Image (cartoon, rainbow, N blue to C red; front, side, top):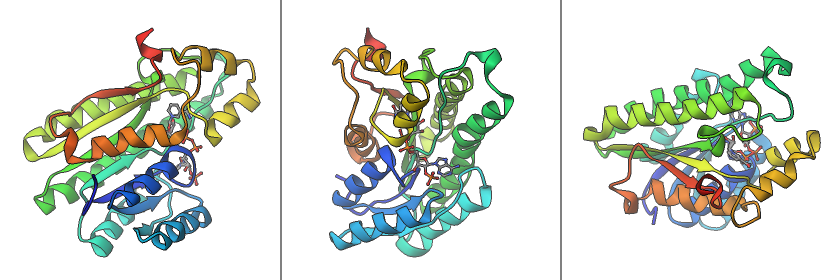
Length: 251
Ligand SMILES: NC(=O)c1ccc[n+]([C@@H]2O[C@H](COP(=O)([O-])OP(=O)(O)OC[C@H]3O[C@@H](n4cnc5c(N)ncnc54)[C@H](OP(=O)(O)O)[C@@H]3O)[C@@H](O)[C@H]2O)c1
């Protein structure tokens, strides 16, 4: 499904991003792996290349524009361009009301989820325009991008902003062959989820209950939707918040 494509994936040292890296590579994409924990990225790259896939590591922080710029350059230098991006790096908190949430939490949540995405779009889109091949960008939002979910207010605001950037970019570049979509991700078993539930165990019941399937997703299930959106099979889908939420936003 992704044969011949070059795809940059952020936040792939664990969870949804790591599952996506494995899946995209298995489907024929060359993947550029981005996150801060370089050791994890190198292990993942070794696993992918050991299985016959193509992967390059560009360790860095999406909040630092120069790190993002370097990752896009790695895609071009190693694999000849950039056809897709899964902008998935993020961080969430839960368990405090707005007035109890420290302003430092607001700044961190906004910088990773929103400024990080901004940096990615600003550097990925010119690479896609330059290639003349167009491209497909997938951004990780959340059910918190549509609803107040129980996560902290800054996270709800940040994931709404992800949908705003997605729609704006989709409408600006639609005629130039670049599609931009977002995943509205429901509760998924990852390190981030484990961290939130360790801090606020009372959330687990509602995070499971609000899915009509009464369970959390496996990261691989979210990766499948990202792969479809990165592929040409979703050629008439753009500017869309695509729910992968076990029915949370339906009920
Ligand atoms: N799990 C859920 O239930 C759920 C639900 C809705 C949406 N989401 C979203 O899904 C995305 C992936 O999260 P996950 O659940 O898979 O959690 P995860 O396993 O903790 O993965 C988060 C990833 O983001 C990376 N990251 C964090 N800050 C970064 C930064 N400044 N620069 C570069 N990479 C950074 C982390 O790597 P390093 O620490 O190595 O940098 C890690 O690879 C996030 O955007 C999250 O908001 C998750």
